Length: 162
Image (cartoon, rainbow, N blue to C red; front, side, top):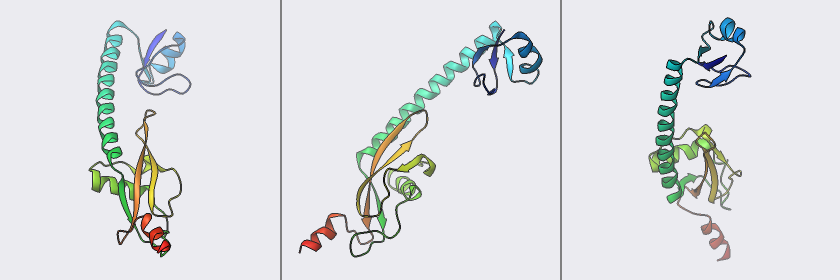
């Protein structure tokens, strides 16, 4: 018997998925527990409409995500940090600091849990972070760590040579 799942069912499928199950399982468990509905013509038509709406929504979200990625890749986000005399920063840069900088400088609110820093950041300069937008949409962005007094990674090295 073919049924359309309403909720996620372990080892069977996700919501709005058409699956084939034994008729006893469908009639005695899935349908009474409101986990699925019978795959009749009207329910199949509703499923098709839901899938069209979902595809349209995903396409608009993908377009919005691409716009955000373009803005983030256009110029690196700048973060300020307290530094010692050698150009090393006190502590390290966190995903929360990157999320705040993106919100302040670019105007996009990205959850800090979606941001991961490629390497531990302990010194000034340009570094990389990845942002996971979901659905295997991952992008890598650059961010620059500068000192509170405006010094960059090149400044301490230039002073050392002089």
